[in-house]
Every structure is written in structure tokens, then in C-alpha cells.
Length: 300
Image (tube, rainbow, N blue to C red):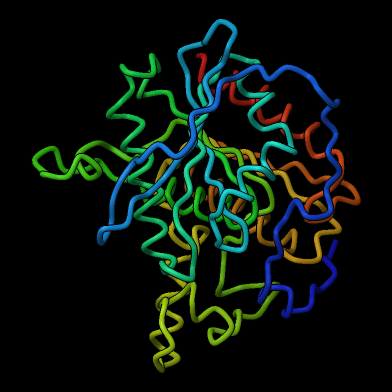
């Protein structure tokens, strides 16, 4: 059945995606985790890269989730608070997961490829410090939503083995993960409901500067930043959840990603949330679906 066309202007501004979500968590409930703020997981050009680490208070399960905290390709502390309101950390930590909420930087300082590199640095950090956190480095889950979902998808399909001889710890370990679950991610800047996104509107994300770039350069960068285009053979298992009333990132973006993953021989599933926007008030229910799915993918 043909999808409704979503106006291209929604590609221009992917608003902070929990802005309309209600806080479904009961007031004054004890946290099932301890939160360590601002752990430095890497450095680039003298700038420290930060993550918060959420450690379960109950019995840990020896597994970890890397959460890419980014909205509209901005990665301030407010994005972590958004995920707190959606109960990411309550739900995952209550299952025994250690959650690493990485902030890969914002488009005001980093372009898309640099943010991608920062996500991979975060994954490598988690692998390198697995013993410290009592987790299995070979069974990492990766999650994110909207812009964070985009970066998570891109990191997963472009994962590399790392360089064991690198001086920088952030480049030695593998950036591979075992499973990926994301909400409403942009996945193809070359096909946004049938049209390419306007490169000038994504100047910061594509290039991180105000210089003039040719159409060929813009299309090449759009391709580099489109995870659906960059899927290779045997990607990790994916779960995507997307609302059919999303007016910022069209459902078509998850459908394209699903098709690319399956075509490459990967295991992939798309759950469509009827009436779901960007996001929806009861999204914590779908976070529980993520947790159930990660249990199956990572505990086996």
C-alpha cells in the first residue's frame, strides 16, 4: 500500500524527539541503577568525549547496552534526560544490563563522519574496559533513537576490527556489536520519500563548515552517512520501531533499512507503532520490547 508522502522540510529539522513525550515513570520510585556521570571515553583534537555509566543495583547479567544519546545530532546532557524519561535506564538496568550512554558530540562541533568515529570510539572503550565493568565484550547491544538511531545504525553497518598496534586505545579494539535496536532512524539521505534531502540544509551534518561544496561532493557525503546504503554482507541482527504518524522522520526510512538488511542476509524486524509520532507518550512500552529482544539476542 503506497505510503503518504512526508514533506521534505521535515528532513531539515529533526526536533528533540522526546519533547512531547510524557513522563510515564511513577514519581519518587527508587532507581534500579547507580549513575556515574561524565566518564571520559576518548579524546579528539583535545576535546574529551563523555559518557554516563548506569550500573544495575540488582544482580548484573554480565551484558551491556551502548546507548547513543543524540537528538537532531546534538548530544548534550538533555538527551540523556530524555532517555531517562523514556525509562531506558530503568528498564535495561532492572534486567541486569550495564548501560553506557555515550555522547558522540554535536553538529556544531563535529560533522557526521566525525560523530560516527566518536560512536565507534565509545564502543571500543566499552570493549577495552569490559573486565572493569564485568561484562562480555563479545555480547554488546547498541541502541539509539532519531539522530542517535542514525549514528547507531551507521556504526553497526560500518564496524571494523580496529588496529591492535594503534597507540590510541580508542582505535585498538573492534567496534562490532552483536545486536542493534533503534527508534525511528534516518537511514537514507539519498532517498527521503523519493527525493534526496537538500544538502544545504544539512551543511553542518555533512561537512561541519560553511564552505561551498559541489553537488557531487554533497551526494558523496550523503551516501557516506546513509546506513541503508552502506549495509554489507551479514550485518548484526536489527530491530527497528517506527511510528506510522511520524512527521519528522518518515516510516519509509526504517522500511528502506529493513529491506537493505534483509537483502544483505541479515536478521531484521520492523515494528510499526500505529499512530506513533516522533516519539509517542507511551514509548517506554516499546523500550520494554527492546529489552525483551536484547535478552534473546545477547543471552544466547
